[in-house]
Length: 113
Image (cartoon, rainbow, N blue to C red; front, side, top):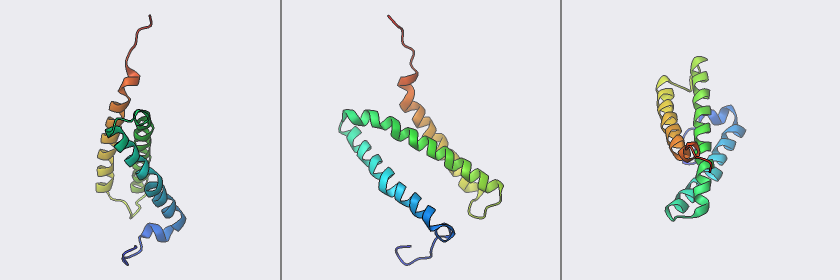
């Protein structure tokens, strides 16, 4: 759109929703992801706590988007294909598996003394 190409159908359908999602992703999620990731690499203590919220958010959002796309597919929406749903399903499985791996310390059994 910025390069003079065609305007996406999603934008034409509802510009407010389009910009809300666009700004949420690029204005909030991407900077937080970069900050937490770089801080983890540098060993920052706060980043070890922030990663739980970040991966939890990614897991919940991918599940919600998958459910949305499946619903769109069931209702014959022309903006979604079976291939898109399959790719999103695989991505959701991978992100959910990573989230479970990150959260595994919370599920360890501990003995009280």
